[in-house]
Length: 100
Ligand SMILES: [Ca+2]
Image (cartoon, rainbow, N blue to C red; front, side, top):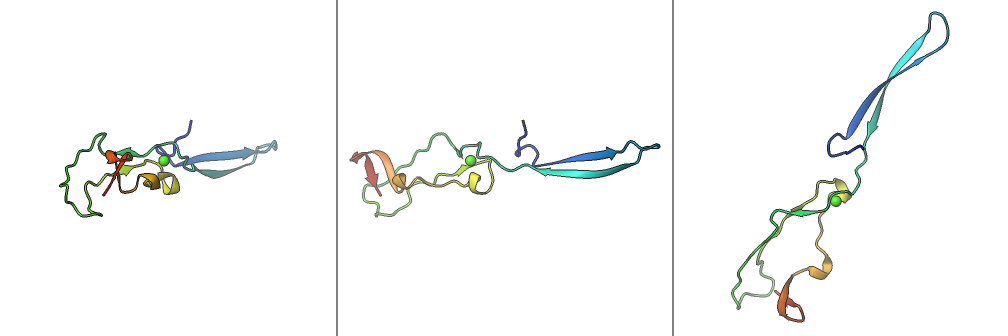
């Protein structure tokens, strides 16, 4: 198995030999770039976050900042927030959400 995360470029030395006598040969180097696969999930810095907020906090206030990283690159490594979860805290008292 080839993993881009361990080595993203491989080099091979290739030699071709004819059947003349003495044999003649040519050598070249083959470079293979390993393209990333989306094989890693985003991972949060912590498996558990806790925050407290005053009941009078203004709408739009930041309560806690979560950070997640993904070992993949480019589009495969982008970490996005699911739109349905934006600005929501689960298990609140208003139809499953507290909107802040
Ligand atoms: Ca990924």
